[in-house]
Image (tube, one colour):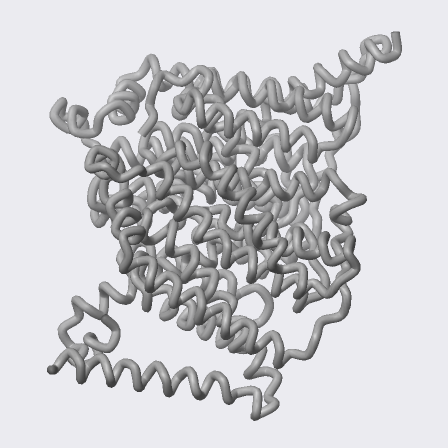
Length: 317
Length: 298
């Protein structure tokens, strides 16, 4: 009885938050809308990163490369077919998904920290490829796309993608896929012996985690209507996503959401109070501090802390 | 005939600059090989030392050629501080060596950001270069032109690599460091003070950044985010050469230097870097210990 009651309070909270989020455009406040749009993009990325980085335990330092790849494929298709980038996103996502599934087969043979290094390299390989084909990609000059549709459209698009991803990861983590992913994280050899086809599940985890990145890449390309290699293939972006997931708690649903909101809010607060690049200094220090002092993230911290009321803990969990 | 001379010139120049590549990656390789620390901030320490050299030269009229008596101890001290403040607490907290290794990467990415953006904050993002009376001077052997600073590069990195090699293989501390890289528990059982050795090896690894900075500042133009361009290359040299393998690092650094010079001349630097990255991925897949590595793979 009690669990049903709790579930309903949780549901009520979620529905209330969603209602507020969907009504925000009525205020016509562009700053608020842009902020929430950015947060929803990052929640999508963090939550999708979580599939491979959190549940499966493969730390992917080149995650943003697939976001950049999504943006570039979207941009190239949109330009060559002369359509709005938004229509090019589905095809681009399909292409990126297939490409990443093929790539992941050899890449996922590399284990542990070497996988992280390999993914950093993959990021730079994409970068070099973009530079090497200036006729298609515009190289260092970048790619100019048609002007973007109104902000409200992006706002709802971001929200829908975010909700879809969260729901997808939630369903995934409670399915047999999620179980297989977690078993790979805990002990890959043991999982293999127990009859889990680790190669297939790892490739699936990789592809599932890349697809939302490709979609958000396409949305961002369309939103900015300009893409260039340094911003799209930025290791700093991957590090930011990793910080969000680590801060919140890898391998949980609520963790990446919490991490993203906290990081984004801190980042906004710092950007408006500190001059120049100082906010990035604090940000780096925050990442280092999270790794040393909060290795399992906020979710674990809240569960362990005694001063936080039980009711609140139940809502989080 | 002209092509031949160009080719020889490219090989010589690539060979000489490859020494700097190797020197810049040496600290990274050592720290990963010995302690399992991936010090992404290593190259940012290098850039920081370059800035120190620059300010000493510009503000205080210091001779840049003897600046290494300041930059090398500085990098050494930075290494000591990093080990004491960051690595030891992490080591105490991590459950097992594997998790420790995994956590060092984000940790040092954070530290790299702190160093990089502090430099931008204090000294702006302007490009800096140290010009000395040797800048742009060449030794001419008939048609061949060899920049003197690149020869310096070869000399300094040879001395650094040889002395490091001698230190690791001939001294007692060096032996202890190698023991630590093979098996921590066995090293502890043999009475090696593990904390002390970790501290020393981290500081020495970091000090190589000071030596690399000496050459880097004299040869290249630098800016606070200069390390961003060098990190992927250094990673490639580290992995391809083999972790903790000094001679492998030197060899691969030189090969990559020649590759950069050649393909950079024929096509573009982007193509040469692409080839280097692909080489690294192939090495990771088929020979994770590196081409000369002795089999430290996890």
